[in-house]
Length: 283
Image 1 (cartoon, one colour):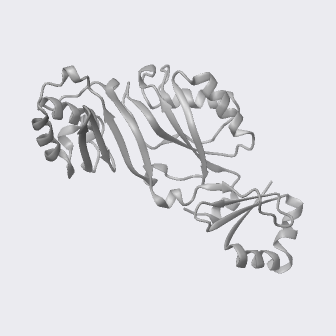
Image 2 (cartoon, rainbow, N blue to C red):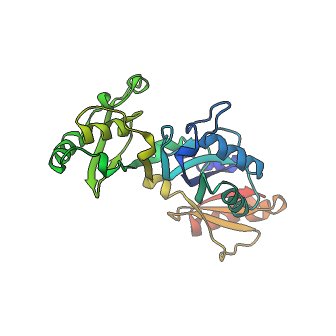
Image 3 (cartoon, rainbow, N blue to C red):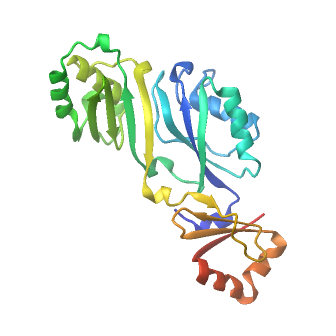
């Protein structure tokens, strides 16, 4: 995470935590002529004035018809307007299909999936369709929880991936299967659900599956950028800092930058002794 490089760009990273109803979309990734999660997010956000140069990265990719309680969409943007207003308008327009729960500001140009620690899925299969006994289900849970090659629980697309080993813990409570893992192969959760509940590897329907949560690594959580409205420094218009308090961002007018830095960098050296790492961004 190159925090010095942030001084040379006008972008920030934004993480949108979103809910979506998978049954209202053809797929998750953008496809020409199809209604997709990413495609609708991009379309509406762009219409409202929030734009970005590169693509949308995600905390978890979901199959067709799969919903999410909390997935994360990450973009890098130089947007400077009222983001709260855009989110309000987005939710009013899209509340039946996608809802932005919150947005977090962080560093731009990240390879976002590398900062995902684990993902949590729930599979809610109708109780009346479950034919196996609780004892049979619990025995199968013990069999498939752990770290191993999960190739038999994926599809042709998954078999083409270089790495087939995954770590997963599966539990069954109140007729709901809960999967927690560091990474999942295509259709892995749906195939595992079929195996647990029938004894055969079978791809169960996506409409019963929900991406419940995406958990980020501390390395990224520490670098969420927070406003510091009560801090005042001469010549500085606005101040933010990272969650771990190790990096401060000073926003200055172009004609005030020299004043903040000082002759021979005397002022900025003194400020760095007081605050530590400082990024100066012109506004």
